Each structure stands twice: as C-alpha cells, then as structure tokens.
Length: 438
Image 1 (cartoon, rainbow, N blue to C red):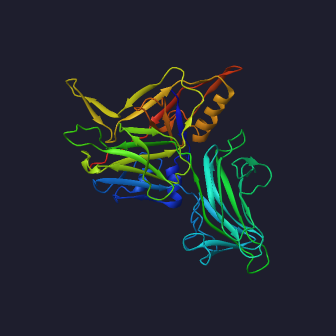
Image 2: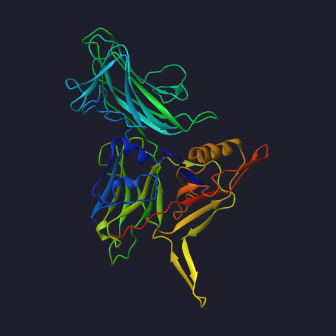
Image 3: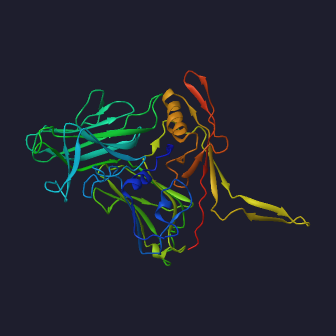
C-alpha cells in the first residue's frame, strides 16, 4: 500500500505537450473545447460533440517544436518561441531549412558557421526524459555535435544518461552519412537551492567557417518525458459495467506507441465516480499516448464529457500514511426553515459533489521529510498549484484532484527527535467538476 502523488504548475504532461504539439480529438464540442480537458482546472470541462461509437484524445509528448523541420522556419529558426515552454536561438551560426538532403521527410536543419543553434525545453527535476535524432556533417566541415545542459545545475548530459560537470556530447560524428543518437535520462533532483522547474538547453553545432560544404545537418530530433506511469480522469459522465442485456457499457483504454495514432493498450481503466485512475508500467518508446473511449454511443448519459485528464509521472512517496485517511463528502447547500420548522435545502450550485481527503503523515527519516517538503509542498506552493493524490494505490475508489491545504495555505511541521519529523495533517480538496447536460 503506497501513496502516489503528482503536483505543481506543470505536472500534467498532457497539458505541457499540448502547448507544443497540440491535442488531437476525434470530435469536439465547440462550446466545451479540448483545452478544458487539460487546463489544470475542473471546469470548464471538455465534451465530445456527439455520442460517437469511438472517441479519442491523442497526444504527441514531444517538446521540441518542429523537430522534424518539416514546416517553414520563422525568423531563421525552426519555430517561434512558445513561452514558457520552448525557444530556439542562434548564436554565431545560421540555421536554414534544407530540402535537398533530409534523413526522412522533405527537410532537415542545416547549421552553418562556428557557433550553434540551441533550444530551451522546460523540464521538472526528477523527471524521466528521452532524446533522439540524426546528424551528419556536410563536406569538409567540423563534426556534427549535439550537447545538452541543465542550466540550473550546470551539468552536461552524457550519452549513457548520466550527468557530468564537463561538457559532454550526445553526438559527435565526422560521418557524411546520417548517424543516429539516443539518450534516456533522469533530470537531476532538486537540492535546497534548486527549483523544481528547470531548463534543459540542447545545442546543435555548426560545421565551421570554411564556407559552402562545411555545414552540419540534423533531422528528426525529438525530446519527450517518457516516464508517464499514471492516467486519471476526473469529473465525467462515463457509464460502464451495465447489465449485459442492456449493452456492454463503455470502455476506456490508454494507448501508446512510438508512432502517431497509437494502438497498443497500455492500461484498461475501470470507471468510478467522480474520478478513476490507473497505474501502469512506463514504456520509453511511447512518444504518443491516446485515451480511447469505445462504444460511447451507448453511454446512457449521452455524449462523453471529461472535467480533467491527467497524464503524469506519479511519485510513490517514501512514507506511507500513519493511520489511514478520512474522506468527507462536500455538497454546499443553502438551508432554511419554514415557520412550522420544516427544513428546506437547496444546492448552492449544480456542480457534482466533491470530496475532502485528510491524512496524518509522520516522517522517520530525513529523506521522507525532504520529499514531503520538496515534492509536495514546495512544488505546489503549499497548494496554490493543483495536485493529484492517491492515498492507497490498491484502492480504485479514491483519486483526488485539487488543492493541498486549501484553508490555511500553510504547512506546519516539527522535529520531535533526530529521526522523527511530525508533519501537519495533509489535506486536499477536490476541484469542483461542473455537470454538463447532454
């Protein structure tokens, strides 16, 4: 029995990826567009336009915009900046779109001059990342060279996935034919002086200053967080497990693949109200993930809507809860009484019922305390940013998406002994999920 947690401004990988490469859906209600499914808020929700037989939401997790260099460059770089996620910058070099010698597709990136072009990618400390691509030199130029650096620590990434203080190369080739490179790594964890949000800067070097024929070429270069290990849906109208004489209900699957429109089933989800989740084994090759809702035309509640969809790298906390947890159902009401003493109640709003989860957690080692401080409280700014918390990963009923410590915005803790920290009660309030009438 373990606690699983994810939280912070950028913890939903689906949202970050969609900001770079977009989110594809099979059918979209213009009144409740797809952005509502990944906006880190319970409302407004996303809704499919019709009760189709099969609905999908597909994600390309790549964070390097135009990494295949297939579309036109903007201002001499592969793409305009997408703040705060990505920017391309040239330093002492010139980047052009070469349509004569691509590895695949119709174009590659040609870098000329003694400098380089770099891309800044937003990453989170402790995340798993994957990078890959192709490179070659052209003519008598210097080697095709790719490097990656964590700007917040100064460390350089090696091809074996480790980090070093001295500059390292992910690709360093004198070949005039394309050579592939790939790397899998864990972004360095924060220290007492390091933030959770970090910048990975990737450098693509030019071929020298010898003029024509001394350029370097790069193609199909992509970076994505490959450690997604939990999917959850919050605030929905999906009905499943109906009697067989009615219909087979609705099935929800997480699909993954290394190519677009994934088809390999990574997890089958059992629907619960008001939320449901699934833990699964992360697959490095899954640059593309999709959520497929099958037989949604049979959904008794009509066209499917989703309040929030999370694809995250959930952390299994080092310390389990001390004494279980408590769940409080919240349905805000206005209560009045007639002269005769009859009580009348009215819902304050038409949102679905919410839950509050409370649990007491103590920390019996420095690492346990530091994790609660850094991964839970500092990463969410004491609940200012949303979180998702599963208090017992063997229980399919409870998966709360909302804000930690909603009332006090404080986290109090004390050190009772050399190896005992007593934390205040962990509280998370579920985000309100508004009901959509089909």
